Length: 250
Ligand SMILES: Nc1ncnc2c1ncn2[C@@H]1O[C@H](COP(=O)(O)OP(=O)(O)O)[C@@H](O)[C@H]1O
Ligand SMILES: [Mg+2]
Image 1: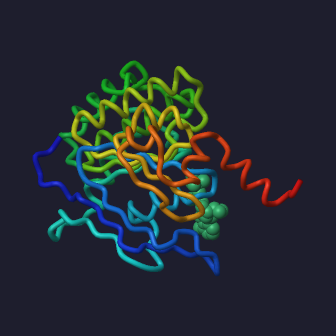
Image 2 (image 1 turned 45 degrees about the horizontal axis):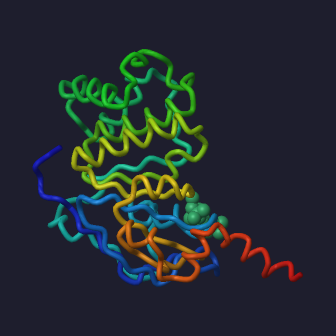
């Protein structure tokens, strides 16, 4: 990890995002600080992925502002990375996939082999270095996506449903890698639909529903009993059912 000053905290002020006439993110304000794992939860379609893309700068807000308070004139995107729900691997070797990510960041050629080796080791992929990335299992590809991001030594890492299509053992390995990335000093901001995962990984929880941030709380307090009634229903596994009942009256 670099000793550089952090670009955090990240502040969202009254952020809105619309597509056509639909307001998909509504008046969302919050602050992400360093050294904690922030986990965004909420039902399908709540806007979790959109929120990550807005924070990472892939989408521009239609209203409000997104400020990296520590950036001090530096380009924030240079200090961040994101792993998408379905990462795309190049038709190259595992090592070459990481090398490509480093080349995009203009990391000098001579510095790359050590970074690649380190990222492979930390994600348990060393023995796959020369394998074709696309023949790896989904779980291994997800680990490679993490290795590719980790090699960049980002200050902030965004993860969108990193274990969405994985079985419990592959999920466990990914969670260990996420934990190691956190312990190495990278700020993790992630989404998940898996409440067990949120309990295991989160330091703080953000509950999103229909584009609104309804609760943001330390993980312990949240899981002990959220203040928001929809968050309570979501924890009980009732929220989706509740929505459906609106559509089909008894
Ligand atoms: N580029 C887009 N244009 C229009 N609608 C979008 C776009 N991206 C996402 N949406 C819609 O915004 C809502 C939130 O999407 P998303 O952030 O993917 O939800 P989540 O990740 O919580 O499941 C969904 O209703 C989705 O269909
Ligand atoms: Mg999503």
